[in-house]
Image 1 (spheres, rainbow, N blue to C red):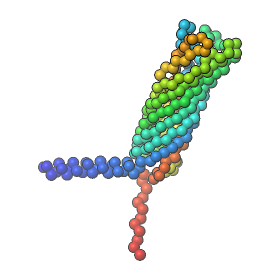
Image 2 (cartoon, rainbow, N blue to C red):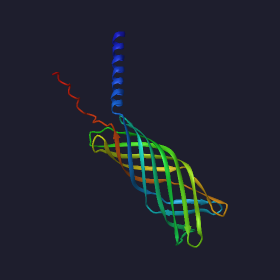
Image 3 (cartoon, rainbow, N blue to C red):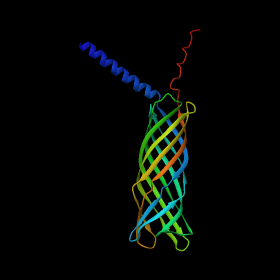
Image 4 (cartoon, rainbow, N blue to C red):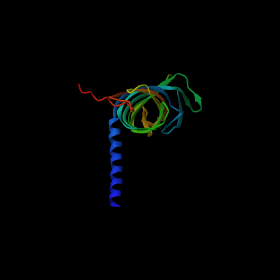
Length: 230
């Protein structure tokens, strides 16, 4: 009985080792470039002593790069991205103010973990999460008043990721992702007033990225033929 248990335990251990060896054989270092669309939903800035002030932003863009390590279905990566949205409307006490210009942009550095879901399709879905730091810049000018806001703040950032991957060839992959990136609330100063205001930077992002994998091999590549003796 003990012999059977030992044999079974040994078989399980051997299978686990084979699984780890196979995953290690498929481990790849990769780099990628990405770009896409960024939406900054309706925002409310809360100004000390004045209350909430609504700010509308146009659709913007994001660009960035990432590099990481893939181990089987898992991907561990570092990501840098830049996002920018221009101010569309400054809604002061229920009315629009003309002559307004400005933008909210950010630089983020995130650590992401992604998991590829195995399917029989040529396109593979994946999900992931990320945490990191995000520098948010706010700038606003009103023609009749001049500079209103001009400040930046580092905040804790977090994101949720869902997307699809298409394997172009063993070294190139195309990803199409939706990424929700948000931060803790930023506090900015208002020049020449001594006042501050609080705001968020919660963005919706649709991103396309091209990834290059170093030393990648097809998962089902055939074994190399044995050399024949002369």
